[in-house]
Length: 411
Image 1 (cartoon, rainbow, N blue to C red):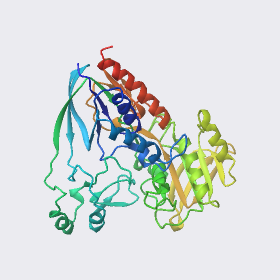
Image 2 (tube, rainbow, N blue to C red):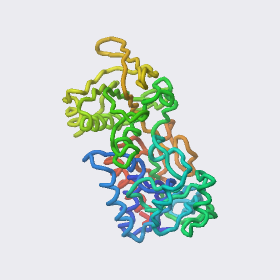
Image 3 (tube, rainbow, N blue to C red):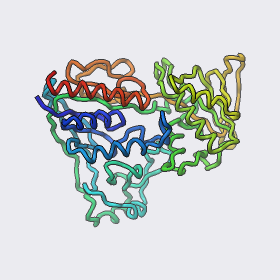
Image 4 (cartoon, rainbow, N blue to C red):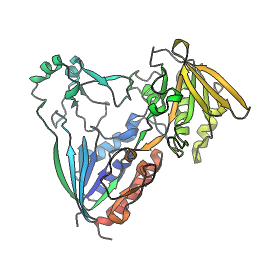
């Protein structure tokens, strides 16, 4: 029986599970498909319950990882094969080439001199990134990535002679022996392009709630200034459309749990930055569980925030890059046609495995959440199991970690 534990996913729940297992003396392998750890939390401006920036929690986790020799991080990596059984799994992992050295080299000047550009995945397409890039200042591992496909012809000449770059590096595979597995593959925002009636993808200044998080972040495309993507203007009127794709049998058939709280938090962002901006929240129901009801009460008390119970039917392009929406006011029994400078779609949480192949012997429900697998020594943490906030994701990670540890100890 192997004493090692595999954690698939380097988001907040995956990091929690990995660190707690390693601090009990177990070797832990973190396999993360992106170049850096942190997951969705790293993209946020602030997160509950303390409304602190992601660096507040993640940097502490990164320090614990740096200091613990039992933790082995494999980034730009993905599990492609699994054999064996509970207590003795053999795991094949494919690692994509990073093309930069293992030690931290500052490529700031070289990166800024490059011409090639592609939409930034981290900023959700709101801005572009260069071929040589690092997504965030506190990224871990603190290494740049060289994306060869984004290099222009002149860029190739610039990087060809760089001693610290390896354009010939290729993908390779490694094999790991582990006794148990924690799946913490997390979530992704629902594909907004499927919400064409709500303006997603075809109406200017109609964005997702995660895109607003990037606009509000001091490390985002606008250095934290919440402005319209098209022209950089401060929005004087903003509409939030709740349940954009959630609780809808044609899209996500469930409540995504965090969307209401995310919108309330973003109302506070706007109220703090632009005191005169008028905000309207269109909702079906408002969900503020437990202590979060105080946040709801705080937002409801703001004089420039107005709540309308009713669904938005569609959003179309208005004059001057504004957005026209048609909605209902269910309480008054009225149909409304209104115009806004900016519309924010509160898109739901979709489990990552809903649209990706799963090599693990687990069962998924119709929505892509993991339902079984524990009998095989495979445990699930965070939003791979159900929609959760950061606090509950960490709690679920601790629970999964305890089961994984008990498995490798043979209990």
